[in-house]
Structures are given as structure tokens and as C-alpha cells.
Length: 319
Image 1 (tube, rainbow, N blue to C red):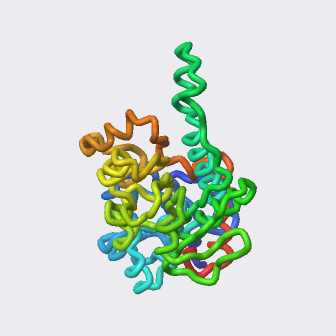
Image 2 (cartoon, rainbow, N blue to C red):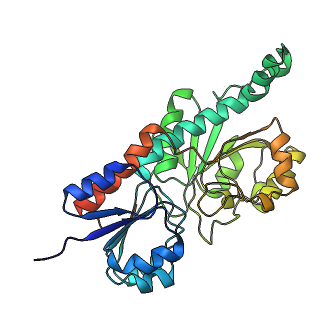
């Protein structure tokens, strides 16, 4: 009698994935309390692994995981998996950007509207009994040109949310073409630099995109602009962002992610909070949130449900 395949849940995810896999005949085991070393000692038992961000699937892990057939990453980014090695070993890698794209898109809209309307500043002032109307005069999104850098699931979802605001939407993706439509104009990088009023970053974290948004990149924009980053903290060089805020090349920033996050994105590395962070912390032109753009009640369920669909449906690879 064949033994049922076993799946290790290394990170906590919505239990719908656990339930659907067990119903399909897998033996699922929660091991999210174990250390990396403890997981390494038992990984040879499993044919499937479910992770989020804290666990690194690198060469030592792959060398131990002799039975492993697939890895499921709850979320979009795949930087904690050595994808080339997984492909070499015939291990299928799944992710679920479809599950939190709506959450990310709505968070982007919320952040830029909050910044434009000075909601953080005015809320604090009213709570202190201050009634400063003129000093809190806002900006309208209507009529602005929104530049989207990276047109995958997140970039596309953000574009969809913007369509009712009567803005011009332009998008650039180095690895995609012919994606333009009536409401979204596909542009080259030079055109993105020329026209953008608000730049929203929707890039994965790779060797190519690490600190891509630096002083050299920022200074190629023809106009002063606003910046939104809900992608990865290390897409953006924080000290260069601060320089641009001080010079007014960047007029304001909405940051759900920071380069100082831990590997698992669960906290900031306190020892790596330099002067640049202190500037962001006190600036009224900066909106901050703790890497929660993709974290809604709905996305928590959808991330796991999408993975279940892909695993049980025999999907070939990650999106």
C-alpha cells in the first residue's frame, strides 16, 4: 500500500490550504514553530512544503529534501527560493500573487489619497484641538499621470483601481510587451521618466532590481514626482530617497516596505535604522505602513485558496 504524500507547513497560512490538501489525500503537518535547523533535520520526509518568507530554500535545504516535489509560497515574491536549483531538481514552485493583488492595489490608492489630502497630519492636529484648514489644503488625483513600474498582477490591479479617478495611466515593464489597452499606455523607460507625476513600484526583488530606485534613477525624471512602494524594501535606496525628498525632486513618498526589514518581513532590524529612517519617521510628506499592503482578511483566505487550486490542478510553475 502506497504511503500518502506528506506536506510540511513551515509558515502559518490560512487553514483552507491545509484542509483542501488533506481532503485530496495528503498528510499535512504544521511545523511553523520549528527552527531552520529543526526543519532541515526532518525535510527529507516531505514531498511538499508550504512557506511564506522566513524560510530560505537554498542549496543545503534542497540537498536534504530528497523527496520534495513542490514548494508553495503564500504570496508573490520568490526571492527566498533558489529557483534555478529547484528547476534543476525538477521541483515545481508555486506562488499566489492573484490572492493579494486586490489588497495591494487598494492599499496603494489609500496611501496616495492619504498623502495628497494630508490625512495623517490633519488627523493628529484635530485631535490636539488645532483647526488648520489652509495648511491642510489637499491635492486631487484627477488629471495626474500615474507611472507604474512593473506590470504584473500587482501593477495591473493598481491600474484597474485607478480607472475611475480620471488619471492618465502609463506603465513600463522590461520583460513584457503588447500589454497596453485603452486606459493603460505601455511606455518605454524614457517616457516614464518624462511624464510621471506619481510613480508606483511593482517589481520583484532580484539582483537586477535591488536598489534600482536610487539617485541615478530618480534624477532621470523630468518632473518632481510622488513615489509609492508596496513591492520590496530593497527595490529602493532609502538614503537616496531622503536626498530626493530634501531637494524636492520627490514631493512625497508612500512606503509599505523598507530596506531595513528582516528576512521574514515580520519586523524592522533595530540595529539597521540609520539617520535616513529618522527623517522618514518625522516627515509629513511620508506615509508609512508595516508591510501590510497585501494583508487583508480577504487576501489571507485567497492566498491559500489560490495555492490549493494550483497544487491540486497540476499547475506547472509560479506566476
